[in-house]
Image (cartoon, rainbow, N blue to C red):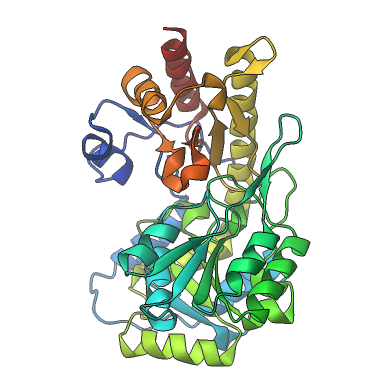
Length: 400
């Protein structure tokens, strides 16, 4: 078995990476330790790099067709990892999940119709419909406290009320949830499907973090939980988060319902949006054929980073019994939802603490909706030495 090194600190300077390149623009200063945007600071695994390099050695990059084993490889991965039998005609390439959301909005939601989201949630779920001049309706999640382990649950009572509005045509689901890392259970997904199907609401299930369940949790594809779920949904997925290839756009869409599929995929085909660029299938095939050992080791490292953050916060961010900063343990992915409400700082002062005093760039919780007030989203997919540096900088800033 090959052992992979996740402790190696990689200098990303000069690579044009987003997390460093826009610090001045987004945070007002460029001297910050960036732990915000959701990619990893681990090297993309060598079996992917080798596959891309092998294709680069054939130095002619004209028009290509999809490799014959592209979709069979994706379908087999989904079956092996999530026990969902996806038929070949259900699946196609899309040029990015946020772009896919925008496409669904334009194909299925009329100008005077509405989109439901469940804040606090990944901010493009709001920004994309709003940018396309659609009204966004909120079905806020409910915070559930269980000692130090807090999480969210869905408010089905409120959802049933707003779903009865015939103008509500689309709900965007984060499954697993971003930013809190909730892996939704089967009962929750079945109830959500029942409400949406019975009220004619189409569901986009963003499952980009599906292959990163941790601490013994198990991802359940939304469309797999019931016939109603299958018949009212579009699922989006990608290997990009799991294998750190976000720059190689490798997303896909799965639509079991024939009428929805013909409408959406017909539009994609007419505009050539579902033609995968050269390197996307190559990277995807390499990831899903050769990536399981690397994935398991990466997830173990992420789990240990979560435990490291929890232990550090317990030791250093508390006053007696009061927790100044409480990390919510994610059930999936490498994002930790930091509850900073114990600091009793308003929005501006909390951001000032992290940015100007601790010199850290995290995602401000209110970016995900007003329900995220008092939180910060921390990306822990970095070498542990980097996470320690960030926590030490925050500790020093709080002590000052």
